[in-house]
Image (tube, rainbow, N blue to C red):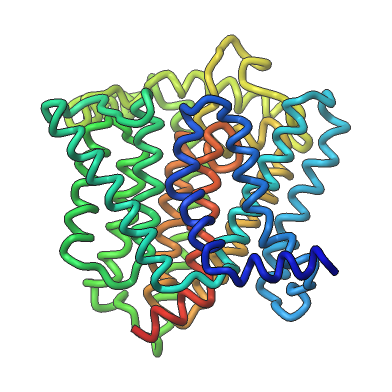
Length: 402
């Protein structure tokens, strides 16, 4: 009873909502470079677990079918990971992988279930905008470099992922002021300056989807038409299939005529080779996955165990398939499918469109990074939290009352 009362009081306290938003949007990015970063990340996951604990204690899932579906999808995937312990060495890495996935589930539940107030969300947006503005001032002070710029973290690609998550969060807002658009414009300039192609392309796709639905008459939000829902469904499925096809094609096309042409275009417009060396690594990983397609090589497996490299796979889908097989990959994709089905079914056109746009951009980003469930997990927690926000009933309801 004491735990039940404690969680109830905590969830109803307005400062808990502020704390969660601060942890996800401002504190988690510090775990990239702060001393004792692993401990800080575990501490963040522990705090994010409180809403999940509340749901279990109060049995909230019994009266909320949507919540029950989300929990079921995460539980099935985590159970598969637990079964993979028998396919892995019971090492520190194995335990960490499971804790990381619990963290992703907790972050999503926080975003989807906490009744954030308008004031809390507005404060969080101003914090993020202030951080981006500070980054812009640092960029100006450094002479407006147009390549490999970073701040707060040393790696430009990691910095690009930070910006990517902040832009996703700002995109959730239904009503945007002139200041909001200026900050988003500055964010795009910073992304371009960081030379983080994956993050830049993913965000440009997000904006392209949102503006297409806003300005193209046949796609413009209209609750009486099914065109929007049909197109969003096709867009999401096409993105999943397209990304899987792209991974295979990218790994095999470097020495083809098309490959040479794509590399030439990338050098001309982005100043970088299209084939950065990932294609060699991806080819070896795909061959390894073919050898053990269903169960993979275990949760503690890394590309260095398969081929001569110290690099990450730079691809969430290949990393998951390598560790948990195509069954594990299918279960992870099923979680995204479940979330997107809810987004598409929403009566609010804005949250349907921006929700699918955000998920599509995350999927594109994860074709070149491995943040969603491991590696740069701080970014992954932010992504799951934002996906949760986009189906949060209280946020959607308040947005409709504006």
